[in-house]
Image (cartoon, rainbow, N blue to C red; front, side, top):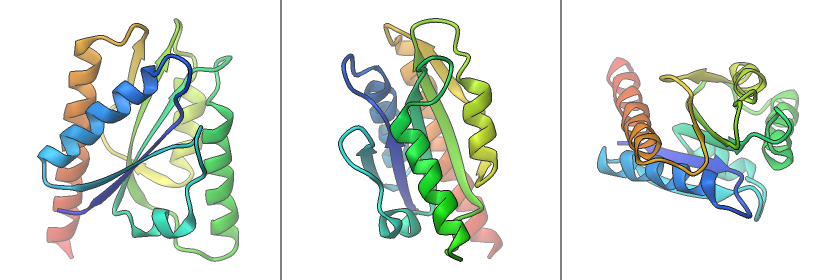
Length: 155
């Protein structure tokens, strides 16, 4: 059913990690192979990125913007694109956690639209992460896999 890479930044409280794990669970339930990468621990390699059929990206809201390591991921994609690598056009889903406000949504979606075809609505959650937010991420993971299945049947 495809390979999904879940790229997210999470550290002190683990809020974004909870959303990432719920999304990964939904994708697995839908039949996908899932690789989770916390950008706070390491960078995503070009090989990992290219081997994925779909992408999920998560960030906390840091000062109404994406976490620095998530921005670095977008910078890496830009560099890969500039060097001629086939990095544009993968289906992607987006999710974020915040302490309040959720102003990260606009710049996050703006960055993503440069490289990805967004699937579904961006899921945002204030902390503490609710069961409702986890359910939305679980459903978003399933929606991403369903999108991959549709794309595969069109080929």
